[in-house]
Length: 448
Ligand code: ATP
Image (tube, rainbow, N blue to C red; front, top):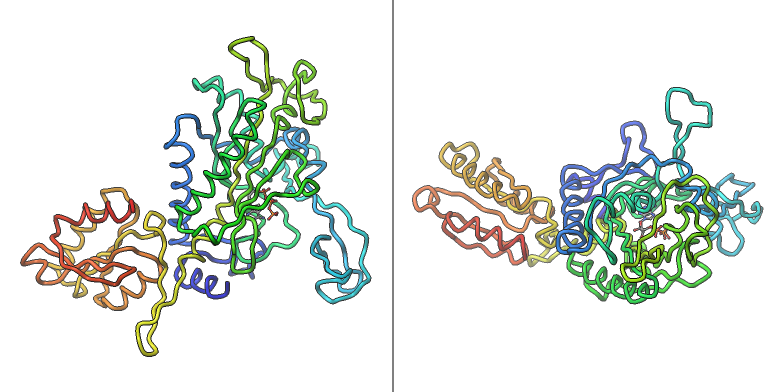
């Protein structure tokens, strides 16, 4: 983990947030390369969940949530971690992190009984902070999907089964944020709520577990580094009928990368008015504030039904850490020489190609390099950069470290013969090709 953290800072993937004021625990900023990798991961998820399918629509809802939403969703009552205070060192710990009844900080056994601690952040809304006008920062993106269920259904031609996908920030006041970007207080989730008919939910749950496992493999994580974990009944969230977690071997240990939950009809049922009009299986509390019936009508017998929902919920930051961890390699170059290479799947690489003129500031070479850069950039495959430093070896090393799949060198032969040298990141092989063929080559490389 230390090596990854150091690479992230050195090359501009991830910085500690508010660093010049001493930093802030549990918050990180994504730098110039980090934002590219993150966007590429989001776009791979969106393509697979929305564009490649005919049964999913997208949504981008607000982060500030009305307290009623999180009251009826059950988060006000249940979204808590039991906490234990150490009377000796004043440390505060999650009860499930205490081993052998001793404080993990100082070892003292003088601990309080566990007390619930709500993980949701609150903020006041409007000009007067009277404690009554407040909103929550959403602890998951899912609730805004549920409360928009009818809007999406009424504004599209979707019928069941169908899904609503959303990528966005979520906030949790984690007691012990740790392990770099693995557990933070502000993070991004990629969530799909897939609505299905009651009775078909188990089949769809199995389908999404398999689908999501395959997707992580396509992002460069070998299947043997992922495991499925059937969450025991007593550990299930209040809304869940069944949850399977996709676990990944993170540098600090095996932990959850994504959870796939069968949320039954709990959420739509909870946000529905006049619940007694419907047969709702989950145990939901009576809702006197909602104005909507979040149900669908059966086209055959015209009866109304609150759909079940399957939720694949992935952490973008945890995904970022996992793909980086898999890609990070040091390779021996013979003797005591070695290179650090980030073998990212090319569609995730922050920079797709680097164009390097042999000589710094040489007018003819730089003009040709710029022309190539523009033509490759116009393909809209992602970022292409021009490296006008004249040091080819140093540029190769830098681009190996940040995972650029190809470097393209322009020399005096290029001016004479319209050729360029391409160097492959993984094999380090170099070959001379015609400049005309570069667009095709990059398109193929990035869609590999
Ligand atoms: P954990 O048990 O690790 O606290 P969780 O079961 O509470 O996670 P979910 O509520 O299922 O997590 O959220 C879905 C996904 O959101 C998780 O699989 C994870 O990838 C991500 N996630 C949750 N909490 C955090 C966090 N504090 N920091 C970063 N990502 C998070």
